[in-house]
Image (cartoon, rainbow, N blue to C red; front, side, top):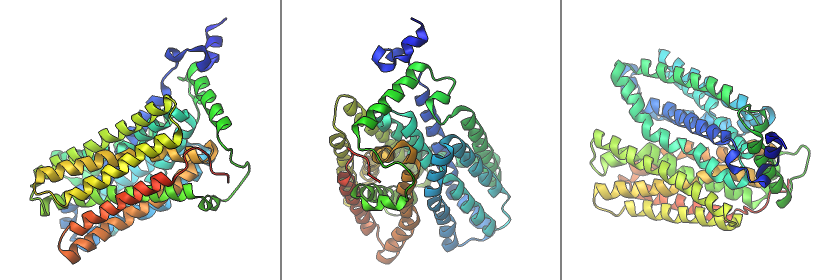
Length: 439
C-alpha cells in the first residue's frame, strides 16, 4: 500500500504525527494580522497630542476622531461576514488588510482634521471584515475540538496588539521625529502583511499545497462527525433575521456586547484612570498598560487551550463552554468590582490585570458562530455577533466620560464595568452550545 493511501485513511490510521500543521500556521498568521489591526487602531491615540497641536483640535473633536473608527467598523461586520461566506475568507482577509494599510498610510498626508476623520472612517470600514473572516476560517479549517484554540489564537491579537501598539507607534515617532513617517511605515508594513496573507491563506485545506492528505482527511472526518451529531440547518437561502428568533443568538450577541463594554472601556479609559486616580506617571502607565493587556493575552490562550483540552477528553459542549465562560464571567466581575475599593496603585493594576486575564477567555466566542450554524453561514453569523459587540465600542467611551464628568469620580464607571461583567456571565450561560440553530 502506498504512503498516500495510508494517509488517506486519516485519523483512523493513527497517523497523527504525519499530519501537517498548516491550520496552526494559518492561525498564527491571523494572530499577527489582528495584532497589526490593533497597532494601527492605536496609532491615532498615541499621536493625538502632536496631531491636536498641529491642527488645533480641541478635546470634543478628539473624541469624535477616536470614536468614528467604530462607526464604519461596526457597519461592516455583517457585510464582511457575508463576503467571507460568498467569496471565501482568503480574498476578503487580504483585501481588508491591504485596504486598511492604505488608509493608515494615507492618513500621513492629512492637511486637516477633516481628512483625518475620513481616513479613520476608511480604516474602520476596511478593518471590519477581518474578524468575521477569521471566524469563517475557524469553521472550515478547524475540527470542533480545536476551535477553542483557533478562536483564542485569532482573538489574542486584540490584547497583544493593544499591549505593544503604543510602544511600536511611540517608538517610530521617537525614532523619526514625525507622526507622519510613523503612519507611513505602519501602513506599508500592513500592506505587505496583506499581500503575504493572500499568498499563504486558502479557503479550505484541500486547496493548500502544504497540507498533506493526513491533515486534510482528519479535518474532513471531524467535520463529517460534527454534521452527524448536530441538528442540521435547513438548506437553501434564508434571511439572517431568522437568527433573531433564538435565545442562543441573543445570548451570543449580548454576551459579546457585555465583553466589549469592559474591554473597550478599559482600552480607552484605563490609562486616564491610572493617571488621575492612581497618580501614575506616563512611563508607569506605559508599563502598567503592557502588563494589564499582556495578562489578557496570556489568559486568552489559557482559556482556549483549557476548553479544547476538556473537549478532547469527552467534555460535553454545554458543560465545557458554560463552565469556562462562567468562571471567566465571575472572576472578571469580581476583579473589576474590587478595583474601586483597593487603596494602592499596585493593587489596582494587579486587579485590572486579573480582569483582563479572565475577560479575554471570551475569545472562545469566535468559536460560537461555527457551533450555532453550518460552515457555509459562519461568516455572516460572526459578523452579526461582532456588530452587536462593537456597538459597545461606539458607546462606552462616551458613556464613561459622561459618568466621570458628572460625578467627578471613576467609582460609578467601575460599577458599570462590573454590571457589564454580569451581562457577559448571564448571556454566556444562556447559550445552548450543543445544537445548531434550525434556520
